[in-house]
Image (cartoon, rainbow, N blue to C red):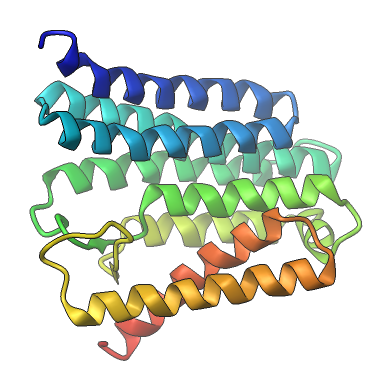
Length: 239
């Protein structure tokens, strides 16, 4: 029994390790491996909650460890990837290259807010850190895979990545309601319909990317951008 209660924390620790390894890869401009480590961290982040519920073990330490791990994997890692991408694409160092690091700061604020906000048990207020990380990670991977794309051209300037970083940071701490993809007994029919609409749009993105013969990371990028745009639309029209 004593061993069982440590299993979820061990899985969470693997998320943290993936984040650290991803940061090392990003600093070496290995955006492919940095993104792979981010994806692995996301898997561990999903599994630790499943393990805790399945084993019926939870602790305040596990909650804190989960947030600390998420800060690294979904906060520091995407920030470093975007910073390094600017350094690579602009062939130099400028003040603007450091702007993407605000993602790490606002991810920490987002996670601290989430831990204290009792309104976010079923849905979210503000952009979830994993979504922000996946947008950044898939963007960096896609550009690094093919430096001839229009996204690579945009990234070679001093506007696109800094502006995107600031927008994502603002969304992290915003009050925009965003639906969760985790199923719960408290879900109503509207949330279910939102998830179905999102799933359909993701399948459409995958089909478009596959039909055009583009790298798979673009489907990940488009899928999470759809998530953001859908939630902004729902908030605008109060759906």
